[in-house]
Image (cartoon, rainbow, N blue to C red; front, side, top):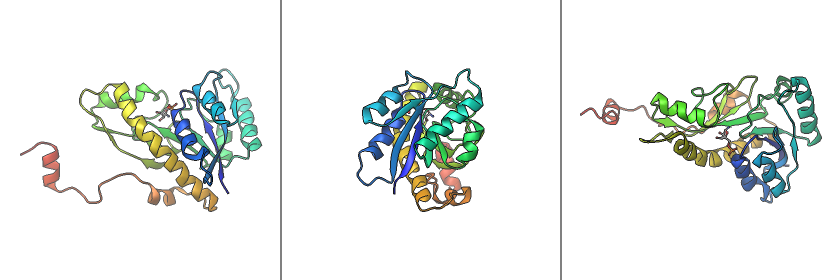
Length: 231
Ligand code: GRF
């Protein structure tokens, strides 16, 4: 049985498209995209859902009491019998009542290596500008569980992407986004498979499956001196 996925998106929806391309046409997919939720009638994500024949709905958030938004969101999720929610460029805080009902069943992709460069106001090009301004030589997407705060939940998967000399926020965003489109479908599948096995994915179990690409061995002093250009 497929895990029924809802995707929440506010903007361009290229990550939604990557999920559609990976799961929607496949015959025996572990994931069925059953619902797309957006807070903006004019989001390209909604159009992408319609083009793929997926039910999309607008739940407005701006200037509405959070309990209205929570009630409407839960009704949409229950109505489509949703098991897992993937945020993909959703620029709103998911109401706490929704998180409580879907604890460890709401995930997000963020375009930097959390816990750095996250939090309120850290979205879009702001994130990539902050990475470049910090001088950090590496960035990359993070897939994580969503809790009541922005970008704070436990990490599921990350992949490093280099920051190169002369990078602009736009060029770095494009390099990271290319990896997001591969990482997010894989991470969604990882979480979906554990849900369909009936495993409650507790953070400790996830960390063992986390596919952070890290060197297997500690570097030698020579490795570090070479990397720093000390001869
Ligand atoms: C992505 O960079 C994602 O990491 C962030 O918002 C952006 C959404 O892009 N959460 P798109 O709408 O999927 O193209």
